[in-house]
Length: 113
Image (cartoon, rainbow, N blue to C red; front, side):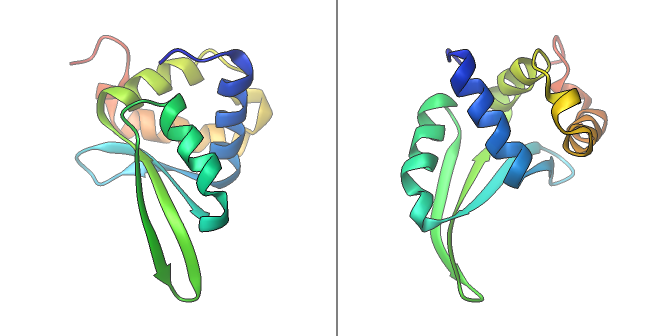
């Protein structure tokens, strides 16, 4: 993932604001649901994080949204980039959720298979 500092910061800010750090018990993931009006921003995220996916649009309970998701090797690379930011100081609550994901999925640690 090649990206400039501004793009990495914007991506981190969006994920801190609206993202979810977790997984399905087998595979970790970061997911983000946003209204369809943000389609252009979500398309940009696909370009910034190659290998991430965009699903939808979905209509559910009056909401009209897309879901962005990153897993596997692209997630591992993104995690390494986030570790070298001020994430910990910007939003301790979100950083704690990020750390919990890392603890629950140790394969995300650098050097893990």
